[in-house]
Amino acid sequence: MKCAIIYCSKTGNTERVARAIAHGLNGSVKMVKLDFTPEGILKDFSPSFTLDLSPFELIFLGGWVMVMRVHPYLYAYIKRCSNIEGKKVAGFLTGGAVLSRDHAFKDFKGVIEQRGAELAGFSYTSTLLGLTLTRKKLEVATGFARDLMKKCNR
Amino acid sequence: MPTFSRRNLFPPRLGGGAWSKPSQKAGIPERVIIPFQEAISMPCKITVHEGDRVKAGEKIGFMGNGDTCIAVHASTSGRVDQIAPMPHPLGFNALSVVIASDGKDEGVEAKPLGASGIGSNKEKMFEALREMGIPLNYPLLAKTGFAVSRLLINATEFEPPLTSGHHLIKEHGPHIIEGLKVLLSACSASQAVILIEKDRPSLIKTLKGFGSEVPAITIRGVNHPYPDTAVGYLAKKLFSKKPYRITADRRTEVMTVDLSSLFAIYNAWFWGMPLTEQLITVVGSAIPNPQNSWVKIGTPLANLVQSAGGTSSPLGQITLGGPLMGLPQSSLEVPIIKKTKGVCASVALLFDERRRSRFYKRVPCIKCAKCVDVCPVSIIPNLIADFIDNRFFSDAARRGVFLCAECGLCEYVCPSRIPLLELMKLGKVSLKGEQSLLTQSNLKLLS
Image 1 (cartoon, each protein chain N blue to C red):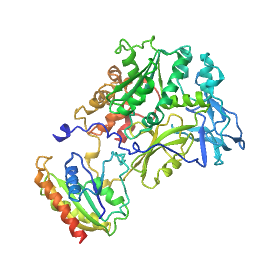
Image 2: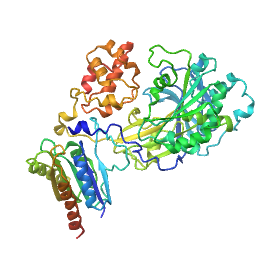
Image 3: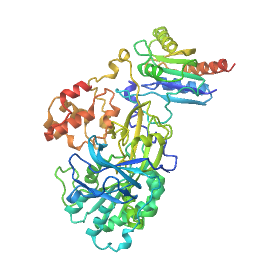
Image 4: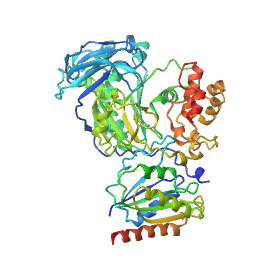
């Protein structure tokens, strides 16, 4: 199964979670980091960036929760990418407060359904500026990816 | 705070993915646009007319006058289609010759300069190099009577994804050294210093292997890459006895030379070929197959993007040069000029206005000093920018605003999103008293 992980990270917490998820998928995955300048130009130079999601069957979208909503970078990507319709999409969001989980889930689900994709799974990791991002939480994220892979393969 | 402890300051090196592949030969474009002006109202003379047939490497005119005069050659064979003002990479419409290619790429008869017996006469040697269209610092050579005491070659790659200079050393290392020997004998320089990053041991080995016969050639490893605009500062630091003296030291005349110019000198001297091709890197997030390729001078950018597998639909910005110091271009019809090292095409996404927050706007400086850490010329960008913002221009000059090499690293690392590079440029323009579109009020609108 071909998978892609598309995430945005500022201080590195979401990046750690994304790596844990890639570990759960046995590493055979394309990882794209979204980092933009204020004008909206991608800062990364690597050729791994893609807007076309047609080769992938399972897509992980991740980012940090900002003001209880999906991060603007991730939102802009979901709005702009092509061939996401009908694909299985899983979300992994990170945030400082546990309370913002339900709000973020609602927002993420709304955005995904707007594009006509199927929400296959959702995970939320609470981090307090990296202080509470423990190894146990990363193992949970790895398990989440592994279970989802098994479910989709069935 | 995590923002302070995790200092990932420099952009990732070799992030472009073009390093591992060997360089290729690009196809012949349908038409090439050869500009004859490097600045607005620069004098030039075109010796061909519309409808003439030209061969690759044929001289079709010259640009500049006096000391800056340099010959211009047709880069491919074909018919002269048009002589008209066309867009130039520097942002104005320059008088250009458009050649419709016939696809054969027939060359003119080559006459190697080395065989013509001009090796003893310096003036004739440089006249011949000028005729071959090789860009060197001719005004400095004329001023010093063709006797420059030192040569400085910056072989470091400042722009993170570009690798064309390193590829040139990897594939043509001995040829570059041969070209350097010719130049050393021509301008009777006592020393030539090649600067290269310490983390490229294979390239240092290549250069040292071929350059060890000549005692005048020194290969020096540096920790960080330097931009081409900072070589003046470097020359002062390397060669001047009093590097911190403000006035220029007249006794040491240092000429900086490009790697591509050295390779062009080799080609002209031993094979009689004028400068019509350039090794450039095509990279960026909008390019699926990044590569180094030998491109005819005058090839439009659209051909390059197409040959590297890119399309124009997700393209947000295309710069001539790297992403940090490159010049953003307004259209894909702009041609490649001499000294171009690479093309960077980036993807851009439109943010939703309602979801933008104050995180992505300019906020006051938090004095984290990341810009001070990355600055290649060791000035204090945040302090100078603060002076310029408050219109204390003389203080900015005292703190060394004119040392700024405009490399753009400070703006890249700034967590407060302060337009440091624009402020530096504004300070320079205001201190010189020049007219510019960049003003204090325009800058407020931008940020």
